[in-house]
Length: 122
Image 1 (tube, rainbow, N blue to C red):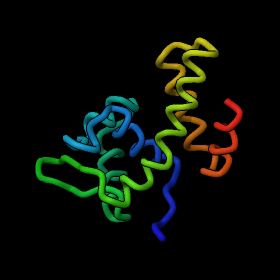
Image 2: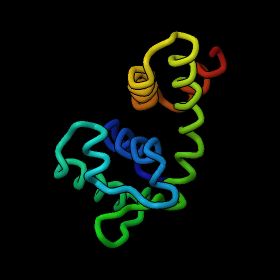
Image 3: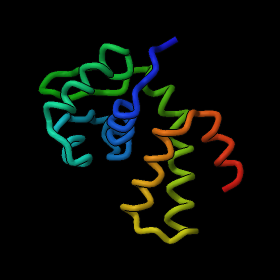
Image 4: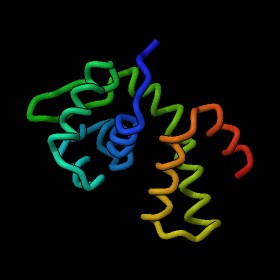
């Protein structure tokens, strides 16, 4: 069993996937830092921890790819995120930015079982 992720680590990993780069091209710390509005140094530290925990694989030139473990976790969590995002954006009519922020906040706060229960009702 993999070590649990903190909220910040999960948010960083999800932002990499949301930008559609982690699965194929890889993600760079600067892209995540820019998307989250935080320093590159803090993101570099989180990416190093995610690599140590086995969720990412470090490539050359500060590029990270999802590991098999990272892909498995994202395959479980990302559809829940997308369903919540679509609900906020299409049903509640939040802006795309606000819908993404709200969905991300729920995903990093609730555990996976609670997210699944929530999504059953959306």
